[in-house]
Length: 290
Image (cartoon, rainbow, N blue to C red; front, side):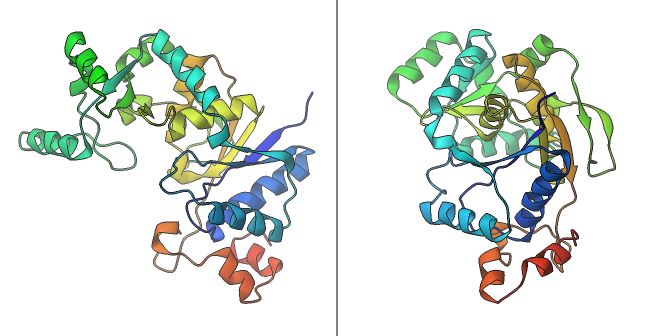
């Protein structure tokens, strides 16, 4: 039997903090304990937020954490052709449609609906897309495409679920409410997700399942904040005929205020800890791996 394959897959849109350190070191520990392989992947599909300086810092930080990983490192921005091929498969199945509304227009649609009743929200708390573009007449859709209007490509969730059937995954960690073992997937909770945009032939959800399959990842170890996103990943795996890895979602590292550490809140970065002389032993203690 081939060895298990783990991956640490940060985005270079900010500096890594203790939450990233925990996930990276946990992946490395599990790979070492099981005789497995560890991959580093750079998830840089968003050119507006990703920066070379942040990518350089990722390499510096994971080296400081004592990780060793296989080369070459996969950078998502170099593999758009792989994601485009997956997108074409979904399109051929009749499961993708273009949506032309701006974020402001979508927000206005939802406000109007909420005047009548509370609107459904996804597991992250964001309102579901109303689905108005799904019913757009084909002639109007073609005119908009020909005009060069910006659009997002969305997955027709109802049709996708009907095509895929009931889904589940094997959870070796636990979800936010202690879910473990065989977990029933609920992709419908996310509505008609974006799978690509006019200028970018992929999304986080699509790229991550394609990458895991192409890289032979067998063990996905990541934070509990992505637990219910696994429902979407299982759906895409089924639709694209991709293998299903085993999942292990881990606890989140939180600050003194009880909130999860975040790049956006300027959580103390590993580079600051390193500059302050904090040892690797102390980092492991702080994240509960000592």
